Image (cartoon, rainbow, N blue to C red; front, side, top):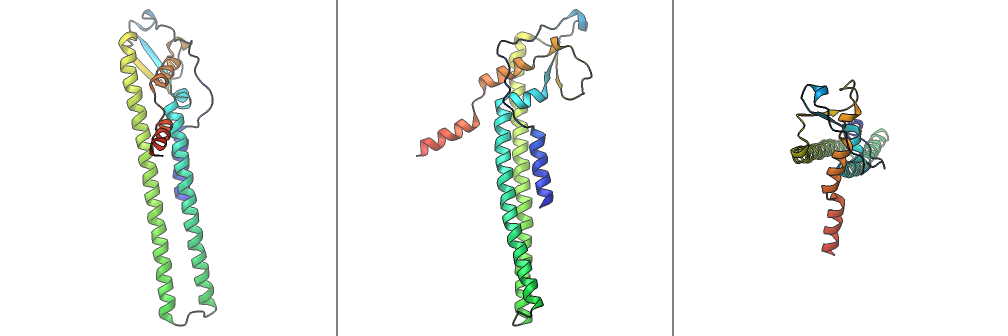
Length: 204
């Protein structure tokens, strides 16, 4: 169970927590200087800012957090039930509460099945969370790739880099197009949560 909770937490942390910051709509990146880069036009996007300000990322983080919490609560309940059954079995065994050896073996087998069921549930929930995380990552890549392809038809950058942590040791802010990208992505993004809410309203 501890293993599941660790994996679930790691998955959420990997997506980054959302905040209330939003890019300034009137803030535009400076045009790359062709001469300074030997004729190559370069730009970069701050990944951390993208993850916390792009509505798709913020919403999917909430969705995964909810799924993780639900899974953890389910496993905790099943785990407590198993512990209670094991304690009850041990108490009856110590107090000679079984009328026969067969009865004790039957209850022990039931507990083993309960334990096996819990392990299978844990594996299934881990797999589901992993699939949801992979789905998120794929969606993020696709939306970013499609936006940049359209965006770069006019900008005509030769190279657009991702900046995260210290993978780029030094970069002039004039090449930062992060706000431009976030504004563009959010402009075209249709809220997943709003779509789900609309579907629920239609069913009423």
